[in-house]
Image 1 (cartoon, rainbow, N blue to C red):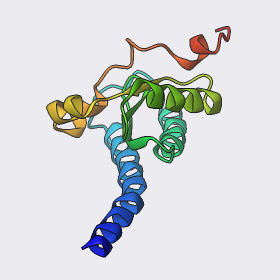
Image 2: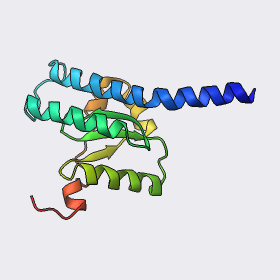
Image 3: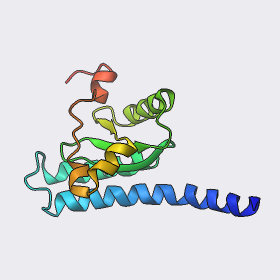
Image 4: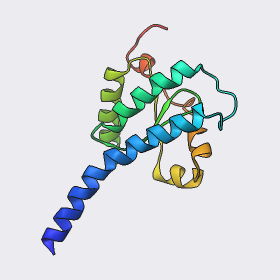
Length: 137
């Protein structure tokens, strides 16, 4: 029984980054495929956000990551405690000082239900990294 549990835990650990990478690709494809309507940023910006999303998906505490229509990165944390998300935000901002990370709760993700609603989640209410780091516009 313990062996089966250990194997299941390893499989979940291995599958999680792949699922997050898939969410990055699906959100990019949805945005650039014209399904999201008029985009507030240029195509090249979303292509760059895809790379940001992929790196974000690989962060230790990230379960899932998405490119948001407004140009932010949406992420579902594995551990949503204040300490864990603070470390994740710090790591993200050190890597991407001009980006914005919007944590999405599992409840919000379930409520969104579709990719269209997920990418429409706003990152406007969160503090961008450049402000956290004290960088000038």
